[in-house]
Length: 410
Image 1 (tube, one colour):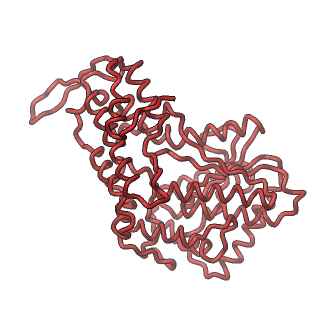
Image 2: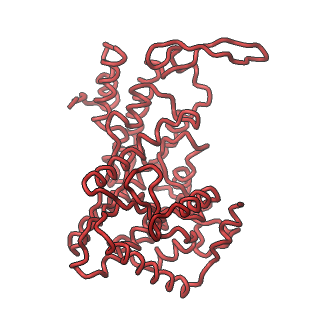
Image 3: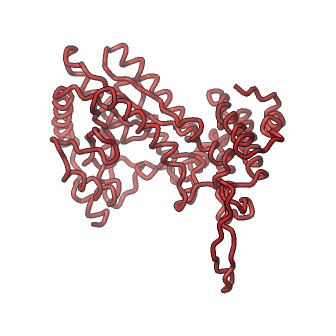
């Protein structure tokens, strides 16, 4: 089914109709919460959909009497450590605000910022082990950086409580593929509004805003106050700033573009043609020119043919051959392995240089920005010494050359 047909299944509602639907949805959330003792885990990315879902649940739960607030609601956000710095700061500020307001109002809401294990981070993979920049055929990043930390947290909740209900801000109107997947899940529902989580045993999935359109998400965020004290207009401005034409209409039909097309992700991502949101932020706001080193570094990483930068041996030292067509002739060549020592050291130097440049040019609140953590540097050093047997121990020297201070390895 075409996306236009999928979207037409959810016609626009006026604000009165939407308010009535919101009232029913609020009651549904309260009933679900009071039905059992299964804890809730809400995925929060700081984007519009996850913000709307969390705000909806927060506002509903806040109206319950204190004696019914008897089970935890965990809010989890995963920081890949290579997030867009603007979005990362927004998420961190949001989680801190949630913690304060939830404590003040005696709400059972507990925010958690998750990060990948140091052995699984982006730079430990690319600079440490020498994995080439991710491609669709070798997408080694998503599971390690995004999925594993949240799945690990949910499994811990299940281990402690037997079950968990996972709440996501996914919507059928995002794409035809998303609509098809969600419709398929509906057929497997075991309870009203709840279906088994596709990847996590003993976990149920709840998607409260699944039928909302993008304009309705923004209508809700603009018209209903944010319960943890942030201004949703700032979120709207962030989306507008990340849109190429700097426009973000609130009232849309199927032919009107909206802020829904803005996608905030990892600034290093080479799975997309270009980081349009980061580039648009710089184009739309001169004060964000300090982000340019990130765009430049990402372009350097995005090499279509990097054979000359990679070892002829695979990562475990074996040589594997394959037949390749070169100008009509069959050429037998080794399958390229990880980045060579020279290029791994080059990427380390470039990341540290970008970090230094940003610290010198960014506004005061971003001056302490960290593109690569000390723990990651320590892990990279360990990999180079213990796994790759590079006994010249070049990391501390590179660090001192670029940063102007000795490397203190914890």
